[in-house]
Image: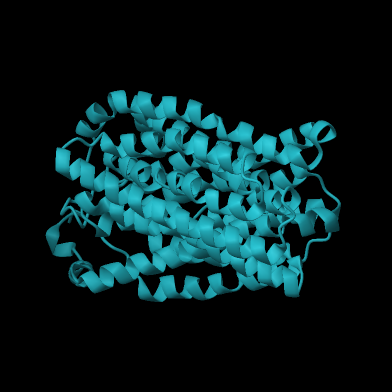
Length: 451
């Protein structure tokens, strides 16, 4: 008898299929409840806050680390950027591929555990090399955080709310900066920089457990009632993205945007302390609150405004125009902060406007990326976007800003940092060109997106 004879089929297989269908129906029913949908979004956002606290707390600790380990601004730029970005970008794509073909919730839970433990390990470092390796470990964990979370958010919220939902998730960037800056300032003031790393690393382990036992893995394409498909091959996805001219320009625009954001943001606490002699607790409170609130407002507004304008006009290129306009608008306000403001307090307050504009880009750009691809490509597409963004933005932005500051120091002393940060801001002009070029082809690329 043939092995394909129906009589030989195991009744256990049918039972398993029935159980899987029942579980799928139960999960879909759970996500129909807005309270559960927003609970999941809230948990993922809290995890992203932890992600950015662990990534960015090093910035408020800058002067203490530089003095204790006897390193230069350029080396600090490597610790705050390149050490993290190298492995983050390298592992981001294979981990996202894993997320596209497996359980995204579990990938996030494992990743959060790793980055939390490695952040605590930063507090044990006794040299530049040891801290570099610990930051490298933080990057290993954080590589698996955002792409699977982006994919889950896109599956549980309908397309016309996607950028807004992603903007809520992206609040974790500036929520993490706020918590890390204020909390880190108090910890380093009353303890030391090593204790600060250990304390901020621990909450992520609790959040990892919350992800694992509270979040249900949603079916692919659930919010749009799209039928799940077999995941395309790795090289098929990469080839698909490369063929979209709009994606190439969009990813490079995001990278240059992040180059400026990280290049100036990672040095703002050092700028306020070194150039304006601002006490560390004041830096924590004034810079932390202003950058955190300004960034939170800008990040949410960017997603909400791009959804609103797109839905109102029927023109999806607003997902590009919102980042373009905000990028150009930020330049004069940032230069005013670094070159004109006479003291640290006025500089901190004036930074609200550039950091607000700086936050507008992320949610619409992620939403645009997901509109371009199929439902089994979303984590990979996010990872490729983040690969380019973080390799250039986080990897090179702080490092080059730091080395320009070192180069200018013999001529300008402490003011070298303000001029280095001002030069970095001008990269926004180049960034704006790529947003403009992306707008020329993205409408056609949206129209030919696959399932």
